[in-house]
Amino acid sequence: MKQITFAPRNHQLTNINTWTPDSQWLAFDVRPSGASFTGETIERVNVETGAVEVIYRATQGAHVGVVTVHPRENKYVFIHGPENPDAAWYYDFHHRRGVIAYQGRVANLDAMDITAPYTPGALRGGSHVHVFSPNGEFVSFTYNDHVLHERDPAQDLRNVGVAAPWGPVMVSGQNPREYSGSHWCVLVSQTTSTPRPGSDEITRAYEEGWVGDHALAFIGDTLSVKGEKVPELFLVDLPREESGWKLAGETPLAGTESLMPAPPVGVTQRRLTFTQGRAYPGLVNAPRHWVRSNPQATEIAFLMRDERGVVQLWLIAAQGGEPRQLTHHATDIQSAFNWHPSGKWLGYVLENRIVCCDAHSGDVCFLTSEHGNTPSADAVIFSPDGRHIAWMEDVQGFRQLWVTETGR
Image (cartoon, rainbow, N blue to C red; front, side):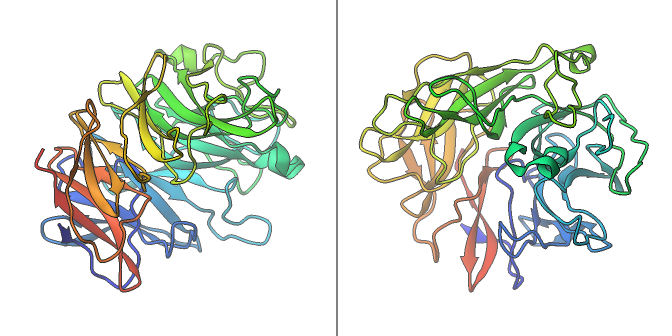
């Protein structure tokens, strides 16, 4: 294994799609910590030479972070905070947007319209953790709503959305904080602040992952019969034609002053796991992880405790069924995970080391031995060619980037 960044500052990888398509560069941001959104640049480092390049530099007091890369082009998408922030409008869940940088050009991904009547295809709040679909045409994100936050923060429930390539969406800009965007954006999840105990209703949708190009899996917080929060796995099938993305159901796509934006008419969410009767119900939130489909879009992986209370990897068919416990470790899996591009292995942190797990048998191979510090739980990511895996590790008080060969 080798360290590839050395500057006395933090280097932050996003949880997926941080490699360029040629497997030569890793994209990162420079937040002081994952929760402190004060970085001003999006950068990349060459894993062979260590050369560092600045992809984008924010201005006017804005901050940027959480960058991911297009699967086929050197195109980058990341979170952009507000320019000229003030006491009324500053970086927050509901005050941020996606920005795409490509060939020296920069464009807003999602439009923002917070003045009624709202614009279909635009959002009324902030998008976060933008991830290209496997074919690069769509971008998923999580979302928080400014309009409902101003009305009642308890109504601002986190949801999952998609940016589709049928823009631009133009906003008149009645409010100086509004802007236009390159993509048609809609929410695809449905939440409620008052879920019925024991039902499939959820209060929050988050940590999504693509299942092929036309479905998204995510974690949804249900309420058990006893009134306890139980995170379960959900899936939404997405429209395949442009017209399907633009047809509203009973509620407007752009929402109302009292209702969250709604999914297009044909988009419904279905529950894949039913764990409330288990000794340790629900998918785990610690370590934080994002549900991930294999490249073949046939199985979805997630983290859940076994009957002993140990965090293990589980697999479920994309169409549903009984989950299969893949790993039987003696100690907890310690990080988020990702699939090898072949779909044959998964990578994560176990026993303070980087491991590769066989997706059929659950057998693991340790790719690293002793570490100076435990690898970060935030991201363990295979290169597109499958030959390397990257992670973060603290060195003398700064988060640095590391890679090692996979032998696969």
